[in-house]
Image (cartoon, rainbow, N blue to C red):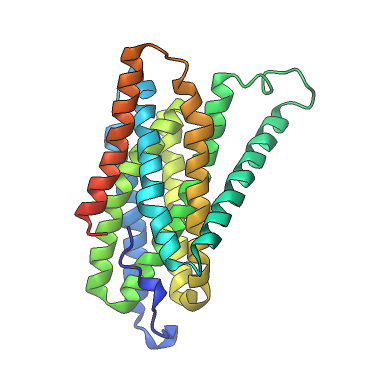
Length: 274
């Protein structure tokens, strides 16, 4: 969601000249926006029957890829100096998350033959949960920057933008919950981790209130890194697990749920007028 690309042509705001009520609006909207989107997603994800989780991982893959290619990357390219800069950041981000995954493996084992190097299913899914939290934190931080820019322009615009961000985040948060549950997180831990990640929205909002001019140039980079983490998790960690179910019925179910995940992001993108 572009929201509507507010940081690309900002006014020279000076915090001393802005009423403190604007800062309070930013803080309230960031907290409510992050927490409300997580809780709405939790109502669905945390009440899903556990035998649904494996099937809904396919939906999560679609939601992740849909968010990347329909929302995050177009937004990053629009705000960057060049598309090549965004593409390069995504490439470096994928290499970064590959290295991080290797470090997570190394943490569990220091020799050539151990469970970590055998890439057991539980280990793979556990790492994907860690990576998705990192990427979601980047994305929430950027959402906080967008909220701050909107309120610094106009309070009414800030309210509308905050509502749009909540609507946009819910389907992606559902996918994140499914991945965390599939990674071995308990329902309580999955909820707490997502709530903690949502606080990055508050950090982005407050920091932007005081330093929007100096932070705006970093927004495309943060978005590109968020996209890289989501691509890596979907393609390197989650999709290989789907290949373990080779029957035609399973394949059709997986393809249908992936398309449903992409479609949910697409419809949300249209509804919020991105």
